[in-house]
Length: 93
Image 1 (tube, rainbow, N blue to C red):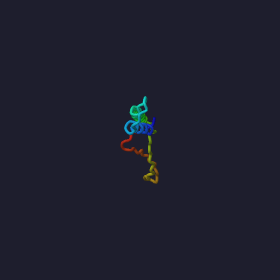
Image 2 (image 1 turned 90 degrees about the vertical axis):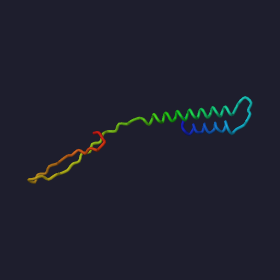
Image 3 (image 1 turned 135 degrees about the vertical axis):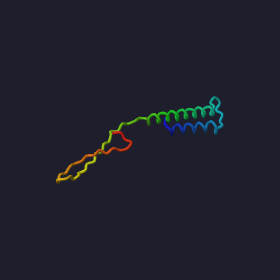
């Protein structure tokens, strides 16, 4: 049962329990209204519980590693390539 159907049951139950005053003999619409409100409330609580547990799943993402390349001229017209690993603060690599 979803959130929308739970709210619908609560609203329908409230209408039957508080707004309708009909005598059907063997069936009390006030009691039917209270039962519908209770079923809607239980459905709403169950839906919220299952949505809450579904959001707790953790997906492990691959670690990101950034390597920066620079070309630095050195004496005697030689060129040396220098590699420096860039670490982000707060991240574990």
